[in-house]
Amino acid sequence: MSVAARVPTVAGAVSPPVPARPRPSPGPARVVVVIAPLSLSLALGLWGIRRQNTMWGDEAVTFQLAHRDLSQIWHTARHVDLVHALYYAVMHEIFGLFGGGLLALRLPSVLAMSVAASGVGLLGLRLAGPRAGLPAGLVFALLPQVQKYAQEGRSYAMVCALVTWATYALVAGVSHRTRWRWAVYGSTMLLACLLHEFAVLALVAHGVTLVVSRVPRSVLRAWSVAAAGVVAGLSPLAIRSAGQSEQVSWISGPVRLPYFLVAAVVGVLCARAPLGTRRPVRLSALAVPILVLPGLLLLIASLAKPLFVDRYVLYGNIGIALLLGAWLDHSHRLRRSSRTAWIAAVVVLAALVPSSLALRTPQSRSNDVTAIAAAVRREGRSGDGLLYLSGQYRAWTAANPEDTRSLTDLALAQDPVSSNTLAGVELPAQEIAARMLEFDRIVAVRAPAGAHVPTDPREEAKTSTLRRHFRAYRTTHVNGARVTVYVRDGRFREACPGGSGCRSRDPGGVWWSPAGT
Image (cartoon, rainbow, N blue to C red; front, side, top):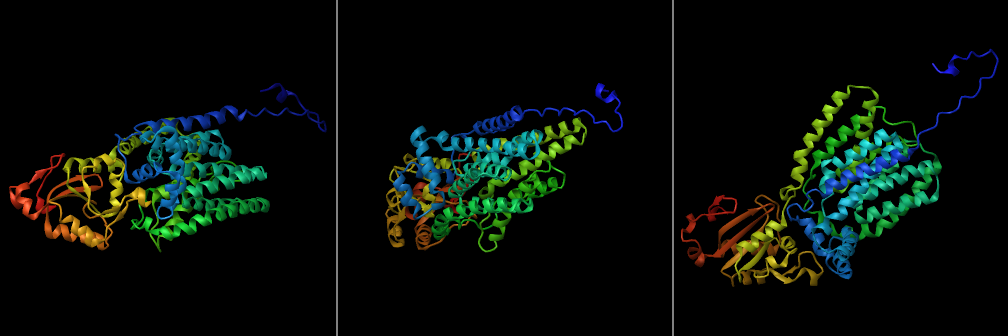
């Protein structure tokens, strides 16, 4: 017992003031909360960043467009992929500074996701203290979806980082009502939306957070002005890009929906616990809307037109990381068995190892354009014809022109660069069929069996000419595509003396019959 506690007080006397206990400086805690998640995310991002020197289709598009001049990027974006024009311009400058290899393609995403992880940690620190902020930042870095897109040469990691720090500016703006904070919030959100339009859905989540938190009207007015500025700045891009809706025509249904559903359910369950403290903005009031609302709104919009793809709302991982971090802090405060907690942590980390290893393999993406181009180079002979079924697959082999230089692209009228397109301009259907008949061997690049392939007169001319005048001689199956060698009927027995019973073998040792391809 302290001395002060043993001193009796006289009735009516005024007790001497008790000196306030000095509050610990937030400096060291803030440094740890920033540095630890950033370092973990950076280490995970650099681990296996090359993916065995492979690239997938969307990254190949970034690679090609970012190597074009800024004027060419703009002219191309006017016809296709306008929503990513700013990202391609940014990557063009990065390629100019650091070269155009795989590291330069993916390192910006690694750095952006590391910055996002530190921002999540700071959000948790501000809303629930350092013992919630640190695990929140670490959990964010460990999430499989975050690890995946940290190593992709696309805009989603940058968008996630910008939304994270815009969210931090929002929370700071509620506590410190200064105009410059709202200007930072609005400009950061606008930049995120210009990199990808669906970042605007985070704006809706922020609005719900403020309403649920019952912030003063002055704060709502300030946010409304900032939000209106974001919408006004995004509107020209949104209106212009609406005419390029064929860019998302490949979406036939929700893409990787289970991850979103599981994260939403787990997050809502965590939010039922008393997380954080009574602050102007409660942690659950911020985390649940940004986790649930963007994905839910995309699902509702998908009732009219399929739009849900998990990476479009990647920033929703901010919410689940905050909720899990605060829940871990809450569990620790309940004084539950530390041994059980450590065992659970080890089990979770062990479960993440196979997923983390798989994400760093070429098979972790929907296709591997490096393998596709290599198969074309291996199967083609100098002077063979080259055919893409459909023409949009030309982008798959464009990253390295040397792979197809010895072949003749039978359908191509104008190359992608000179036509300011992603896949070039093709000849009319009749001319494609006529050119095909000038060749005895054709190497065809096709989608995997069962995949949806767009149909138009050109594609119908290609397939009908192959069916009537050629026979499939050999097919190589690679991740996301098939490369088939077709031989003219009159030349088939020379290429395959066994006739219809002739069989061959792919590099993996799998036998097939030409008639079955």
